[in-house]
Image (cartoon, rainbow, N blue to C red; front, side):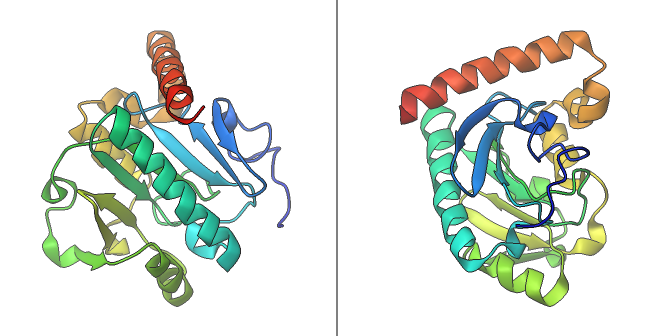
Length: 204
């Protein structure tokens, strides 16, 4: 494993991003997003401090694919359709790989309107190939279709801002600013509590 960055990384041990765990094993944490865009917002985070899921070893990536399916299945069962994204370095504000899953029913064209900026991929394994070639990517899944987005479009919080806007949750997009809003933080805790109860019903 690479160096432990727990003193300054939200997704390393003792980091605030790991405050609400749902599951962990030797390689990954699955957690409630501490500042959810919507109830049901979950992250998969590798325990190794690496920049993207495409940077995982082959064995770790197989485990990631299994967890990806596990989280997606849960959200489908409790919340309906799911939207998934990973900034893959481009647009990151926490520089430790993490994949976002949230209830989401909007059309792909609402996420990225420029079809020329989209490239459909057939499997998660394509992320490893993309990272090997370019050392970065923008990835999302919607309506059970996986896409890479032209990284020239990327900016900090790229997908988080887009998803927040479509979910009518603009006030939740900037998680650092949201931490200053006591009322919003209380709502986050309610959302996280309900999500945790639902996860435990489904998997325990």
